Image 1 (cartoon, one colour):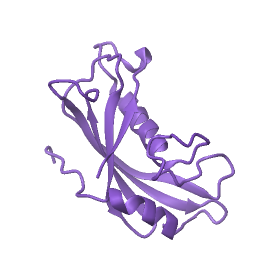
Image 2 (cartoon, rainbow, N blue to C red):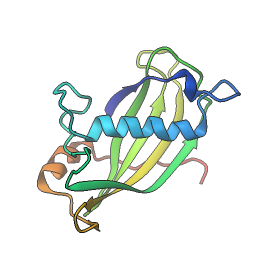
Image 3 (cartoon, rainbow, N blue to C red):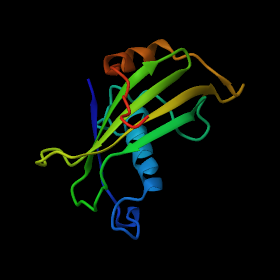
Image 4 (tube, helix red, strand yellow):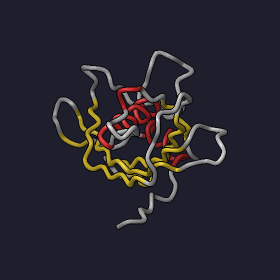
Amino acid sequence: MKLHVPIRLRWSDLDAYGHVNNSEMLRLLEEARILAFWVTEDDAAIGASTAVLDGRPGAATLTLIARQEIEYLAPVPYLRQPLDVRLWLGKLGGASLDVCYEVCSPEGATPEVLYARANTTIVLVDAESERPRRINDTERAAWTPYLDAPIEFARR
């Protein structure tokens, strides 16, 4: 199962070539990840069932990025409709998880365009001890339904 997170582009995301800059793609992935996994006051948040991490300042758990990889498949032009960022977990370890992404044209667009695929390894860290901490039962229960095959990058 995949989460579908709509992410709007900003005009400033474009570079001199008129497409989304590669560094901005990391920001788009971050925004989708936060919407999918961080608790908000909005009960209708994207991925509400998967949003179990407290990302606010002073939270007991830090979510640190250990690795990221992006494969760009097509330039992303400026679009008024939000991109469809599909997320799932390629691995659910003891203290880490691999978030997989497909960045696609807006939902319902034809033809559908797959612009990029990516993977982010996140390590959960206890804020007080600054040591990795195990994924707890609540997190594991929320995330397990989204566990699927990891991204297979074509250009490795």
